[in-house]
Amino acid sequence: MDDGTPSIWVTCPACGDQRLRPSALHITVYSHGRNVYRFFCHQCADEVVKPVPQETCELLLEAGVEYNEVHVPAEVLEHPPAHVPPISPDDVLEFILELRQMRPASSLDAAGS
Image 1 (cartoon, rainbow, N blue to C red):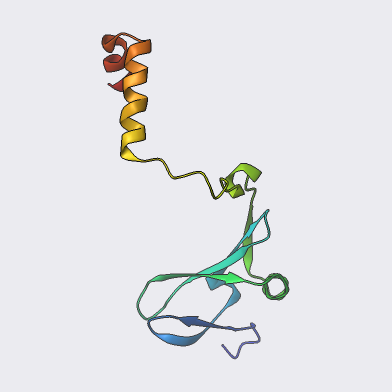
Image 2: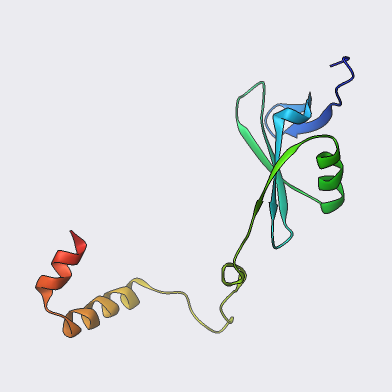
């Protein structure tokens, strides 16, 4: 890589440090601010995805790393209140029984096929 093209040091968890050209990396910029970069390791061929701080993201973009922007709806980032228990298998069964009381079984069977 001594042809004047910038190189970027990355680390594969399995294989260790390696130098890549900017074209070998890709950044995903999320609207909520948690960005990641990804690359395929030349040794093990695994895809490596790691978080990237905003400052580093800007430097990588200046070096020519390609990117895409992803808008994440606010609802995805919402968390239920701590006192709300997760949905249990019993909750699902109860929901199914309530649905069956509301509609004939034949319409439920047709909807599932």
